[in-house]
Amino acid sequence: MTSIKLKTPHSGEYEQPTGLFINNEFVKGVDGKTFEVINPTDESVICSVHEATEKDIDIAVSAARKAFEGSWRRETPEHRGRLLVKLADLFEANSDELAAVESLDNGKAISMAKGDVAAAAGCLRYYGGWADKIEGKVVDTTPDTFNYIKKEPIGVCGQIIPWNFPLLMWSWKIGPAVACGNTVVLKTAEQTPLSALVAAKLIKEAGFPPGVINIVSGFGKIAGAAIASHMDVDKVAFTGSTVVGRQIMKAAAGSNLKKVTLELGGKSPNIVFEDADIDNAISWVNFGIYFNHGQCCCAGSRVYVQESIYDKFIEQFKARAEKNAVGDPFHEQTFQGPQVSQLQFDRIMGYIEDGKKAGAKIETGGKRIGDKGYFIEPTIFSNVTEDMKIVQEEIFGPVCTISKFKTKEEAVKIGNNTNYGLAAAVHTSNLNTAIEVSNALRAGTVWVNTYNTLHWQLPFGGFKESGVGRELGEAALDNYTQMKTVSIRLGDALFG
Ligand code: ADP
Image (spheres, helix red, strand yellow):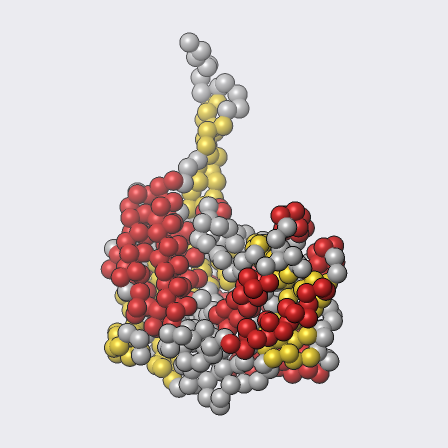
């Protein structure tokens, strides 16, 4: 059996594929293994899905290779674009079901899941638009030479995605890869395989040829590692933890030196100056850390507030965090659902204990909510020092630290006091402060008077240990194309 009927409170009954999506069909894994998918809201088993092991990765890679060498690289760019746009339309047409599956599996609030589906459709359509605008160049060197530079697809791309934005990451990876003429083997995170399989049905419906996009469920150390070290995968794109990012790079180096792009962790500073509109700043600081339950690589987890407004800010921020609606992801009003898994829940609670032991003060939160499901109170730590683990390490949960600064220079210094460099934010009404501080912060994205406002048209990625390469925008096309220089020796140049 490679599909079952399931039900969500939002969209009713639906057909959930459980197989590996290879060559446009849902198939069982060669070893016949399956694994359970847990509902983070009540810890029940939703269903089991087929698990890809090394042999299945070989099969999926062969399918992708055959599609690449066969029809796909000969396909017109216009047609590739059309298929992506069709896929985007299908995401929108199936938005309720996709969002509901995302909430069921990941635990994210249904209103947020709908936002993810809309953004995934936007991203796919955007890259559909790029497919026939990937252009080369002619370069004059000497009169008897004609040089042109082509941008060609890389080939078979292995893509490994995390569990925090399953559908969104699916679109960020598949959109640019396919637009550029590559084929794909994408592995979902073991915590959240379901929405990607529902979306896989739409790949076939959109009309993609078999083998162009293959989606597998499986574990990182088995299926993920097999992709990263595969000799016939030309490129690997990974989003996840910095620890695993290092392993991916090593695996690429130790196999066929496949090209690598990485979007990794963060510990992003959210800096509030005394001249900021305080209500606006509090809304964005709250959204910066608690959006998606703090499970964002760019979460604004270190809040720094200028001394003169610190007391007022903390009082209002605390009140705001306590108002966040935490609970059943299927209630329309819910803002924060459960953390994704027992493991993540335990990690976060471990950090909270660590903060307490290190002498930090809990301003609000710090506890589990209820006794079923992985719910954690929105938590704020004050009285922190820069060397504490809760200030240095990525917690990936609804936990932030807050401390004071005096000057712009100090704000920049502490803001940059991290090995990460994914994102940062500045809240101020002074244009010079906004620009000076943004320029001085070492991060791939800096938001001013806002937070988490990513857009598929804007490049996203990390400075320092937050990654290699940029996703989204035109920049992502560089990850999925390689240049070919063709130099033609001509006869004597004719000048009319
Ligand atoms: P987290 O710690 O938040 O679960 P990970 O970085 O472990 O994040 O996981 C992100 C993705 O990387 C998942 O799809 C996971 O299966 C995969 N993964 C984990 N370990 C490895 C590995 N050694 N090689 C390849 N992929 C891996």
